[in-house]
Image (cartoon, rainbow over all chains, first blue to last red):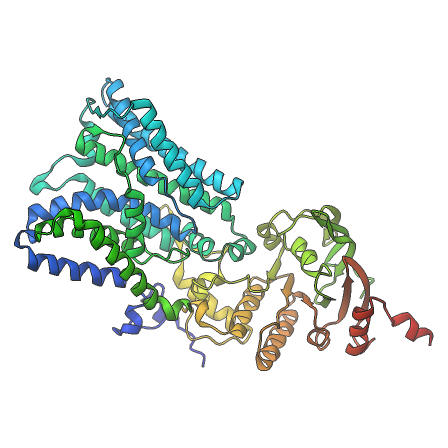
Length: 341
Length: 257
């Protein structure tokens, strides 16, 4: 049976040739479908169990947490889709924060914080580049290379600071632009996060680079034999992951006005969990940036929602653990037909 | 046919992997619109030879001439730019991507929106279906994932893609392996179609019965060396199989006797 789509029909459906039908079979093909359902279900659950959960004040403070984890998750998801993993994101997060605070405190000329911010992002980019070269030139798994980088970065910070915190004393330009409080307690970071989700979702789904990220993560050798420079694709993904982690770190430090060595410890696993909850497959080649954002949203909701529902915050990890495993199983089941796994 | 200039000529190609000499100075040429069978037992060096031609490996010695000009093929990307399209065994399609995204992988179609170059998915979907129809491949939708398709359909997509991009040389590595009898026949038809549309075809296999019905010429490799070559109809498949099994050509003997 051959159905050749006509031009007109295609024109209405960018990546589809048949009209979209509201069936489960169609819905499950959307990578972020599972995450969206879970997100809404949890939202309704917490809104019902804790009356103050659905208040503007809580929503905005929730967004603050989600934005910081979410920006890191977007980068991590991009890299996982490209077939690698980055455990050093939390180390980069802390390192970028420290570079930012230290330089902003030294650079006292007008807008010194902006220069400090740019350098902090460049340092993050450089760490991502080093990660990629260690993985690609050294032919070792990214799990090991970036685990080493994480320990190395934390070790350096501890060595230099001796464990002491550093307060932010620079100008207010960058902190205001990143996370200054606006009307109704919204913060710019909420909007930066949304912008980043839109931009990187677009890059992944609508550009040549994005197409090659999917291909490289899905089947590296096939991509290579079709003429894709897979090493360059992977290096770019490592740099995206690291730079977004650095941005996330500078946002968090700007909010706390304080840099500490233990800052963001364990956050790499939260970002990976959020990516998986968002529908990204650890095997690479499949995933969604919008899903990553929803995954980070679920993590943030669970964190604050549990407290509001009267559950001690110590239980947070237990809940996230269960959600993570359920999400991984459900996502795989949803994908089973289209991935043939 | 041999008086004409070959489309591609590989001279004295050598390749070693550590201590193993996979190719010990092989000469190989392909003429315009010719189907060449590259036949040999496992480990004869067939795949190594074509991976050099398709840019996956770089030779340790030897020269490649493309349309009479000496070329160096440093990557699959450069091979594709010369018009050398390869259908590697199980390696040409990404299962977790749609047919259309696979079809244009490495040669994506784009359009400009403002200053940004973005994928033209509409055109990719349309052109993919049109290109596949040309080689007689029928698919429900270009947005289907490759993982949902049969082995024969996947082979057809890979061949259809090569034809679409007007491959000068289409290299097929064991194209009939793991296919049903019916799919084998369809794939052979696709190969004929590719040749009729102007491609030369290199057909790699270790099964003489796969290649005999379609090849104009069969080149036999043995232990990293060229054992000899046979024109279509000169020897029966059984005799060719005997050459591979014994490692000796029997063409001369028959002529004399």
